[in-house]
Image 1: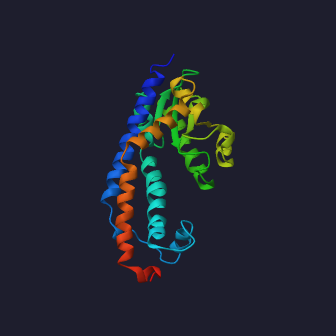
Image 2: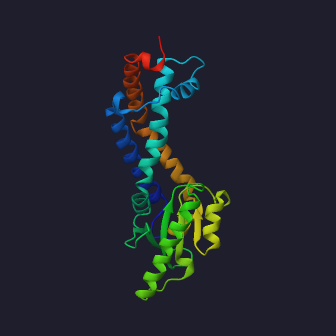
Length: 240
């Protein structure tokens, strides 16, 4: 039986995402046009996607949207994987002190202690990552042998935060063939909490957090800042 309820997990997820989104929203509100290093050649194609004629408005969207809604947000979430897992699961997942591992947890299914690396999605590792990941687990094996820890092959886990097992790339499949468990999305959270159906609920928690944060307002403010900057530098973008 889980040591945390589904409602508690979803409330924890909401708080994590609300804090994350609110912090990013504040940073967007304070960002200035000059901080963007824009390629005036390639930005034209992106701007064209927002309108057949490139304008100050479409250029501003081409600069702001990929930054605010893509790279910046993904990077911020990526640097907080460990905190996300620990806070959302109410401490069922704990930070690992083992080199190369992100968290440790007692599996709700087989009740064994697991050592886990966290990855974002089912296609977010490349061929070069395989050796790095496997070397970390080899280090774990050597540590367990030296310290007489009861480590079984099934205790090595790569946890993928979203997607399904069928979505996993061939890179993940290679890791599995080499004896490391890979759990994705719903199955990952189930192994940690023992609660079915968390995955969709956590996505809905993130959606509610986004709606209640000031993300839209901050992005609108940043758009106006960038539009003003473009207007003062029209020649750089080929505008009349």
